[in-house]
Amino acid sequence: MELYPWKSSPEVTVVGDIECLDIRRIPTDEISWNLRAGETRTEKYEVLPFWRSLFSFDVLRKTADVQDEIRIKISFIREDGGPVDVKTAVCNPVIGTVRAEGSEELIAIPGTQQCEYDGYNRLIAFFQLIPPTAATSAEVTITNPDDNYSVRVSQRIFAFDSLIESRLAADSGTLIARSVKLPDNLAQLSFIKLQQKRPDDLTVYDAALGFYLATGNTSKITATANFILNRFQDGSLCSMARSALAMVTETMPSWQPSVAQIAYRQSKVYATSSKLKIGHFLKNIESESDALAGMAWDLIRAQKESIEADPFVILPLGYPDKGENGAPWERVEREGIACYYLNCISVEQLKSVPPTSQLNFFSVLAGDILAQVQVDLIHAQEGERGYDFVLAGLALSRALRVPVAYQK
Image (cartoon, rainbow, N blue to C red):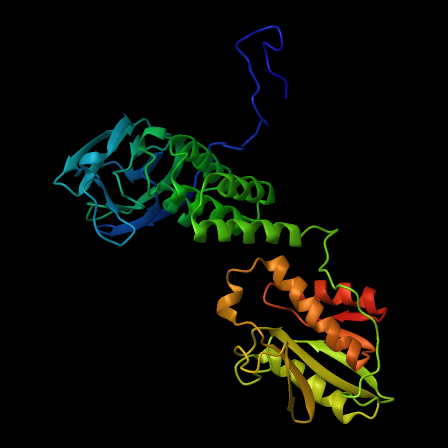
């Protein structure tokens, strides 16, 4: 991309990174159907009060001497399902007419256009519409008043045609984050403008960070989280920002958990054995409520019954509840299989700990157990985030110089 005029003109000043967003005009909803004589059909579409929408209707019907007009009713609904008064809606008809009927409905009357088919009329309604404040969806109802003939209806809805910055408000961030059909680039544009308008509103940055986490936009996660930590002092929001930065770090190819210094050592507590010692990292061992856990436990039990293996299990931090003896872990036997509960911290306490710190702590505790048992093979199942156990497994595999297997 090149900017003109460039360098020689004071009209162009680059103050930061240039972002290119794809904001092409693409319909969010496009549908066609046959409407039988006397039939009524209602469709529901997502809208946002700070995005101007385009509504296009094309109705093909048979020509008759006397015909009732086709009416298109549009009503709006709040996020909680209640109706919205249409008095704050702004409508600009291009083809056809639009008027308010009562406080909760707009009525669009299509205009008659030349039709390429003999014996038929083409009725078209096309208008720009800024939804009422607080509206999150629009219900469009079309009725065919003809008693004898069906009509062909085509609808094209551009729910997010242009952003109305003056409509952005304190609750807009939540609406953007919860939107189902708003494209990611348009949501990003919405947040950029909203943050410019409300730079000190922490609810805006809370919603933005949540949205970027949901979409996996790592560059935006990093920028938003750092801004939050530098600008705000809200404990909950800053904790969320630190966790978000940790999650970005965790997904970097070069990052692995810290396992401290681990060395094999003989222990009087754990008896030596000639069998192959396999350490399993499992999310839980509740086979009754988790089918995957049940399959994993069946595998471990089969290994135990084999003369060639001596399996044991290491569970996540905080599982199943916080221990009471203050020890780093508890060793419990289930069906003759050793299970290590890393329950020196509770699940509730872990909520304020960034994911990377959790993995580091898990890896240090698990590494101590693996070294004492003198493990021969690490078998990592999927953890809470899918890849967390295998990250710990890879780091411990290198530290202990034993192989690791990952079961997805």
